[in-house]
Length: 162
Image 1 (cartoon, rainbow, N blue to C red):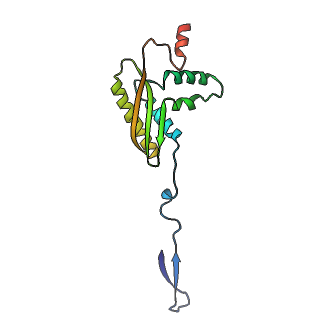
Image 2 (cartoon, rainbow, N blue to C red; image 1 turned 90 degrees about the horizontal axis):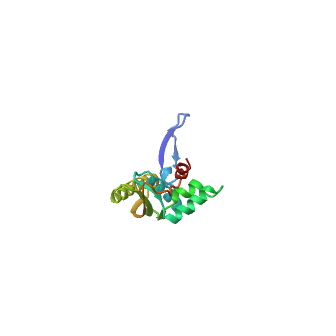
Image 3 (tube, one colour; image 1 turned 45 degrees about the horizontal axis):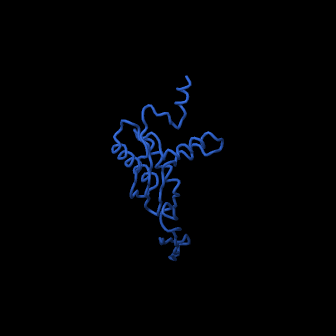
């Protein structure tokens, strides 16, 4: 509370005391609570993991198969489902833990890819959400061989038809 004294214009020595009161309880950014849904963290982590060289796909073979079918059905979820495929997050008030399932491209060192995925996911999630990432568990469910024809985007089908 700030007090200021003003002298009146009438020339009298009377003082008026005016109180100025600040409203609220501190900076606006600290008022209230922010809650981040599991799905938000899953999308961030999924996109960050896919950005790493050597990651071919996310999720198990079965989830990728269902995802490919869902992508071809109008209104089936498309990229929204792809973003979280292979990612499970547990989000608390200030911390999160993540489980990722990835497919690594043949020729890449799995331990290097896993380390790069961990680093990229932790950096992205902590930067975007402010949550502390306490662990990133990575399960490598498959290795994409150079001649495998199971691409999610259907490009191999086009190559075989030509």
